[in-house]
Structure formats: C-alpha cells, structure tokens
Image (cartoon, rainbow, N blue to C red; front, side, top):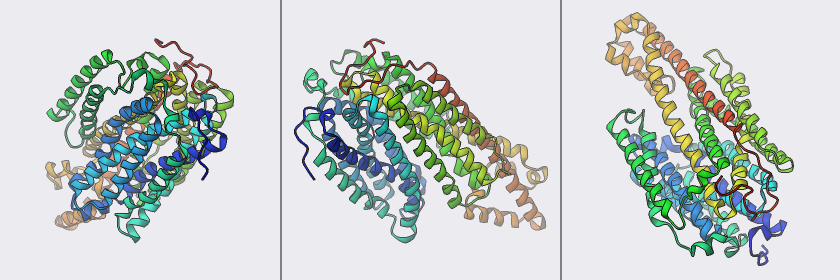
Length: 543
C-alpha cells in the first residue's frame, strides 16, 4: 500500500488517499457495530455458562456507561492533539477489551472487560465522524456520512445471524475473538493511511496542548450517576427510590460544579459556547428526542412479535432486516441529495415525520396483525429515520468553527446516546406499570378467585416468551384440578391482551416523541453548507 504524500491537513489528501483513509474509518465503525449486534445474540448462553444471570444487564450497562461518558473527552482530545492517535487508541482499547472479554472466567470479569471495550468505542464512534469531516467539506460530506449508516445497517443484518451461528456451532467466546482480525486489519489500515500531525487542528497551538483534566473528571462523574439512575429506574429500583433520586441529585450537583469550572477554563473539555449556537442546540434536542423515540421501537418490537403475535425469536429478528435495509437505503439517498442541493431542514423534517407516521402505524397493531403488516410499518419507520439520521452530524459540523468540530460531533453523539438511555428507561417503566394495570383489568373473576392476589401480582409476560416459564405455570395450574388447563388459557389470554395494550402505549408514546422531534426541525435555522473543510462557521460565535 502506497504511503500518502506529506500533507498539512487531511483536506489536502488526494482522492485516492482520502478513500483509503475512509476505508480504515469504515472498518473501525464496522468493528464497533458488529460487536453490539453479535454480543446481544450470545449473551443468554454467556450468562448461563458464567452463572451470572443476575448481572446480565450489567454487561450492556458497563459498555454503555464507559462509551457514553467518555465521548466528549475523546472528542476534545482529538481536537487538540489530532484524530489519528486517539482513533488508534480507541481501536486498541476495543480490541484489547474484546480479547479479555473472550477470555473472561466470571461474569464480573466480563463486565469489567466490556467497560474497557466501551472506552474504546467512546473514541471510535465520534472520531470516525470527525475524520470524515476533516477530509470532506460539509457540501460533500453527505455522500460519505451516509456510508456510516450503511455500515451500521449491514452490521444489524449480519450480526444477529453471525451471533446465532457462533452460539450454535462454536463457543460463545468467539463472539468476542472475532473482533480481533477485524480490529487488527482496521488498525493496520488506519496506521498506514491516516496522517498523524497533519490532522492537528488550530486549537493545538492556541491551547498549548493543555487538557482540562478537572473538567473531564467532573463531566464523567456527572454523567455516570445520571446514566445509572436512568438504567436502574423502573426496573431494579422504583423511580422514587432513594437510590435513583440520590444518583440524580449527585449528577445534578456535579454537573452544576462542572459548568462553573468550565466557565473559567482556558480550554474547556466541553465549550459552553456550543450551547449558545442555536443550530447546535436544536440539533442536540432533535437527536435526543429521535434517539429516545427510536429505542421505543427497536427495543420493544421483538416483545410484540414474540409475546403478542406468538412468533419465534427467528421471525422476530427477521422482521428487522427489511427495516435496516430501508434505513440504509434512505441514509445513502439522503446523503446524496443533501450534498448537491445544500438544503437540510426540509429533508430532516420530512424524514422524522415519516418515521413518526411509521411509529403511529405500529401503535395501531394488535394481536390480529399479520407479520407482513408489521414489516411494512417498520419499513416506513426505517425510511423516515434513515432519511434524517445522517443529516445532523453534517448540520452541526457545518455550524461550528473547525477547531471544535471533534467535541461538537462527540457532543451530538452523546445527546443521542443519552436520549436512547432515558427513552429505554422511561418506556420500560411505562410498559411495566401499564401491563400490571391491564392484566388485573383483564383477568377473569374465576382466575382471581383461583389464585391469591399475591400470585397474580407476580405474573409477568415471560410465560409468552420462555418455555421454562410456561412449564412452571402449567405445573402450578395442574394442581388446581380439572379446571386448571382452562384457567391457564384464560391467564395466557389476559397476559397477551395486557402486553398488547402495554406495547401499544409504548409505541404511541414513542411516536409522539418522534413527532416532537419533527416539529423541532421547523426551528432549525438553515445556513449554506460550506465548500471548504477549514472555513469558519457561517454563524457568529455568540449565536
């Protein structure tokens, strides 16, 4: 592979060199995206073998905490010192975490090593978008940012099938070891093609390479308790519990101190001037709402297909494939359209509106809905989300000065992740409370008389999803004599009806959130997409 000629900035790379750098970036994105989809498939087997079902959620929580909390820090460091070293550091941490996760001998070890992976992902995700921003000007960036959505879509299609194959045919540890060849290839390509000092920004000289260590620590200490509170609320602890309220209070106090420190910092880890930029504010709010609404669909559609429609896990996974294909196609088309046209507000508004329509259609489904209808509704949702999803990175990068592009990109990704976390927590709590109320309302009087109230209160939808849970219910109802099978059927119908109603309410709430995101796009001020990479923002600094 030919070594790139010396350049002073990534925007000066030849087309061939730029495409080589882009290939390394895409490999890094593929590495992160594949891991997320594969690990979710193999985790039931992992938890069983490591005897850690009680800590099942922490395998995902540790990864999420580490990646989300570290994103702004990685973004700022890449603005000061350049992209290459931190992108390579992120991939190195990710590969190391993958290797250690595959070798884990206990659930606690796996949780810790997943946090190491998460730290790596926290660098890879935002910096990959920043590298694309370094190479291509905003007016051309849509053509290439759409490829990142295509990579995530490909991973969403290939990952679950690959995870199932690994689980059934090999050892679950290969779900982590498979990252090693992909990661090593990505590191080799990036090391060879991405210039180092050439990607330094003007902030390096201005800041004299001073890092805001206090601000970084306070940001992490403020974010982690907040994420923990949102993750635990409504599941592990009640929203009003001392644990959740205490974490939220700790987070609020720490973030207030963080803002105070950042006001006086010479080179803040999170420039508060970003919040004075109206385009950044609106974009952050839209991505926050869209992230929350998106997880309201993605996280619970499997529950609807398996629990309400009674389909298998294989069918449940397959209905998402057309969704991801439509999302990928729409992302690519949207990027191709916005680049020559230059107008983004209308595309974003229409895209999120279509996504909201698809979600309202999903909310109208019930136990009699056929699988083809589910797929059509999901495809509409995917087209809308894909149309808008790729735009906001371009919008924000176009609206801020180049020397803060990395931290602005990371901040946008951070708000999307926070929205997804908060949305999942709130919708999960909403689902649980709605299900409980609907189940008691639907349970026949004969069933309430046959079972004590305490036993009815403990009924959950697992009987519709898990053969072992159903067998336990069958054994319990067999002890009721001749009426047992009939009462069990009544119970299952009450569970199915209550679950359908609960998921309907979640989809409806998520659709309203997505509609709110579409409405917010109306307030998105439109400015011309810059034709150069390093040009100043077209907005005044105090806007």
